[in-house]
Amino acid sequence: MTNCSSKKLSYKPHKGKKVESDWRGGDITSDSGALLIRQVEDQIGLLESVSKVIVDGRHKSYVRHEVKQMLIQRVFGIALGYEDLNDHDTLRRDSLMKVSAGKALDETLASSPTLHRFENSITRQEMFAVHRVIVEKFIESFDEPPEELILDFDATDDLVHGTQEFRFYHGYYGNYCFLPLYVFCGDRLLTAYLRPSDIDPAKHFGAILKLLVSAFRRAWPEVRIVVRGDSSFCRYRVLDWCDSHDISYIIGISNNNILKELSADYTVLAEMGYVATGEKTRLFGEFRYAASTWKRKRRVIVKAERLAKGMNTRFVVTNIEGSEPEQIYDQLYVKRGDMENRIKEQQLHLFADRTSNHEFIANQFRLLLSSLAYILLEQLRRVGLRGTEFVRTQCETLRLKFFKIGAVIRFNSRRIMFHMSASYPYKKIFELTVSALSDG
Image 1 (cartoon, rainbow, N blue to C red):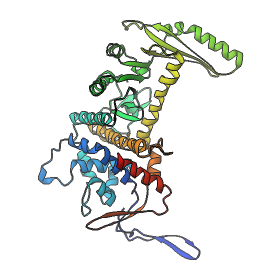
Image 2 (cartoon, one colour; image 1 turned 135 degrees about the horizontal axis):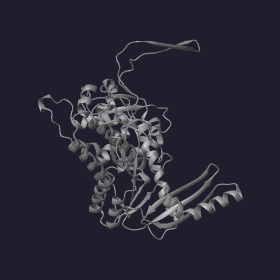
Image 3 (cartoon, rainbow, N blue to C red; image 1 turned 60 degrees about the vertical axis):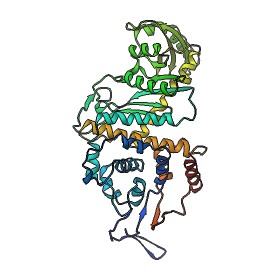
Image 4 (cartoon, rainbow, N blue to C red; image 1 turned 180 degrees about the vertical axis):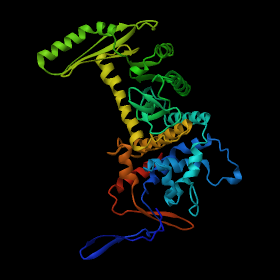
């Protein structure tokens, strides 16, 4: 990053020689690995497409920074670890960021006040359009129609520390927060929808599911769709809709006295097994059950597990027939837990919980900016790092190993050259990744 400060810093001498540093290195970036993110964006055109659905209401004569440029500046900044708008008061002069955003090298990128106005100008309609782009890009990524899509739904807490619009106290989480709803298909993000926390956790579950199913069935009429979620999403209207639209589901169901009675034989056997062996005992079974709001009885899988701390009995309701209860639970339902790791990646590594704007819609847009950064990085590891040891690497490790590379920048009328660190330890993998992303 270029900085004209002449302040000299002194350190412990080395073998009788002074050790000093200053900020006069010239045009240098500490993030040259962002060229990989730029390559991903060039491959899939995600931010290009998103910029087209955001209406620029500014008077053209006053526009210095295009929507696409600001979008790239903000999303790339998040991917590189710069969560605050204030970071861009310096980043706007970084030549690497300018190249990424398509800005002339003799100009500067948007300032933090400009980016703040940009975030606060987004409308609900544009937010919906951005989600539509995300789904369209997901569909475009398949060369052939998939046989099956497993959609994982989950809600999480997004703690707030101010007086943001629509923030409420949530008894379960014990704090003021938002309650965003996420939808993933494997590692791939489909929806990141910010909601107030004073609502049913399943609020909008059915509406979002219907929109996703409609989009996927238009593209792939024969695709098999499976919906997974914990007991927060066990809502009879959605189950009825799935049954009538050939959608499979595996949804957790909260314990109650009737379920306890129906599963008593399994829990007794699990208890006997634990007493006999002194070790954890797991048994699986099934029965037919209908809650008072259900139109008919449905298949319920029970996991009766006796641990040292006591019984741990769980239930899931499903309309999938023919598979053994243990397979339904261990091979299908439990795997939804990996979605929580993807949400943590966004919150811990890509600052999805940096919802400190006062306006609720602006905070929804910040959540989407984090989501767009995640989609780019997921594409990088799934396609660019395919076949390497880093294909399952989390976003924070990607940043450390592949983005934080020092480089001297030289340019003339014909070329922009990034002279990257000669001692960078992952040169070969970096080169293979560039090649994989160039090949598409």
